[in-house]
Amino acid sequence: MQKRGSLSPRQLSSGLSAAGLLVYLLGAALPATSQVGSMLDQVERLADRGESREARQVLARWEREAGGSAAPEEQARGWYLAGRLAGDGAAAELHYLRVVIEGSGSAYADDALLRLGQYKHARGDFAKAIEHLGRLRRDYPTSEHGPAALLWITRAARSLGDAERACSAAEQGLREVAPNDTLLARYFREERVSCREVDRAYTVQVAAFKEELAAQRLARALLSEGYDAWVLSASPNDPLYRVRVGRGLTEAEAQVLIDRMARAGHSPFLVSQTLRYDEGR
Image 1 (cartoon, helix red, strand yellow):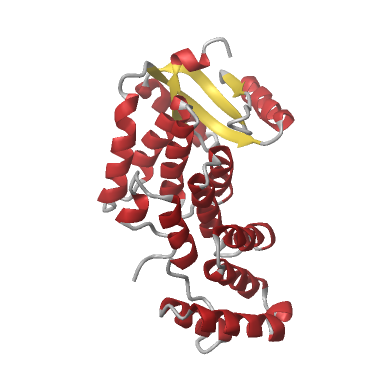
Image 2 (cartoon, rainbow, N blue to C red; image 1 turned 45 degrees about the vertical axis):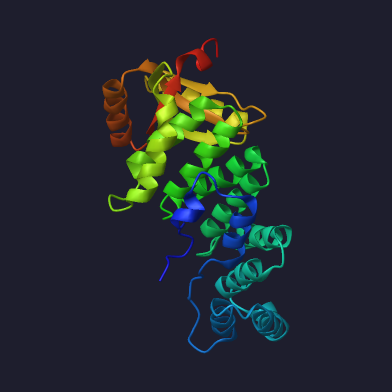
């Protein structure tokens, strides 16, 4: 059985069409977390058999009879199922957004963010795709979908002309991908090919914030601890303020810094730094 939210070779291919992605968003396998015999289980079984009309009818009945009083996890599951059964991508987007906003603590939120990012990528809204996928990475750091999110961040960043971010995401993805996931690793290597001609060094990222004040506050605290901290400003293509330490480091130097910061309780990771991109910042 396909893992919830996992991507098939066709869905991961660089030539994936918007229509093909919408098929995935509306029809991928779903998790089964409710008690056996519940109406939501019935909805899922019907959907798995391709009986969408019947599945929608049972889901509508569940919403009338139990949706308002259901536990939060079951409500999130209902919205998630509604996203799958939606007749078009825009309707699915609204249901997945509800999972993300109202069911952020559920087992479905990270999957919903991945789907939202893929949908926005398919629609050509690459900045919004990065926003959704970046939130997945930030808010659900242990999610099984983290490496897949990095792949779509790589593609969206490249479409926006942000070579630094695309290369950094591809390299980070290669470090995180599971050893047995040879297909995903291959796609990351393919994405990284165009990075080999870029003049790069390394820096270390510690955190990212929507608010500049929070980023500056952390940078000042790191400076007081003796780190060469700085803030990469937000841009129209990247709405986050990124707190980083060190510039123009070799990979070995950056790794020493990562180990030191990790021992001090931080959560740093390596970032490839395009020198000409960052000059003067």
